[in-house]
Image (tube, rainbow, N blue to C red; front, side):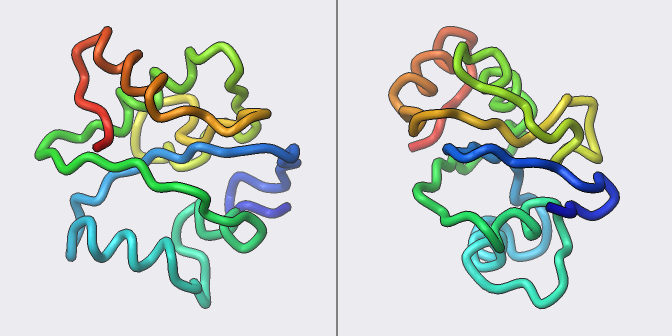
Length: 124
């Protein structure tokens, strides 16, 4: 599938975790409205993927700090995660990616435990 400037990327079947922030205009409410709505013209990398993927769950934390890179670091080092699209969602940082593939549905409890171990706030 074509993902903007990233080019053609093959996405294996499975579950995906995408991390991002909502510090722009309208905050979290505006970002969620965008992600759950139809995008007539893709704006972010995730807009391309959501045309072929269903949102299963949303994990979020309201915080003044940008947590997405720390969350991406934890997901990148999770045993069963893969990075099918280097650079996805990470054009404004040094992360390898903000999109991670899992064969099975990742568990929020496991993710929160790993975040707690490194002293980072997790999703509610």
